[in-house]
Length: 246
Image (cartoon, rainbow, N blue to C red):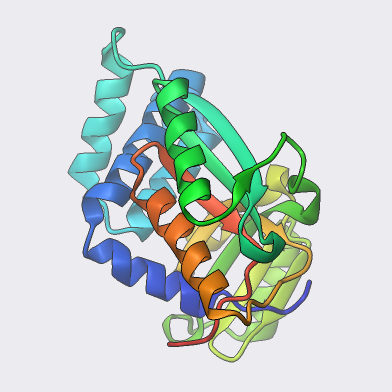
């Protein structure tokens, strides 16, 4: 692990999302629908659904909204079928970008993603062109201020549950897991009453890249903003070393 803390960025994104809950709720609603379709509506027998519910709660989605989403997905045979699609490409100065989407119209999504790259002076690449620069991992971030557990006890709890790595940052703890062990580790922490700022399977860059030219930063930010505004886009991963402005 690089020891690179994304805690400030996570907090920043949460603040932005608080002003646009409709977007994050749309994202999670689609994930709930897919999880129910793939594994059924009972979280006790569907680990993927449990993970999405945990994500929903960490984003302050009301319980009745979660329940409605699960019931709708379970009871509506004619519900929209969403497909996972992923795009890879390059931003300014070769910044690596991966875009994950859930869509009911691949042509629309592909056109919108391509447009976002083009407007930011980047370009879409072929599948696999940048994903080798990332590791797919479960990542759990815990705010130190919200955690009363002793760091050593927390570390042993995570490692005993199957975590690969535990890192202590200035303001947070970061736990890394294999994707297959993520659900078990997250559930163990939840059972122990540990509050998590973020808990998800994500793509972690092996190396971070700084941008020094103002135009490159502006162009990359334009691409990222356009992607974030697209309802089909579920997640965007990149290896830009964002300046610490928080």
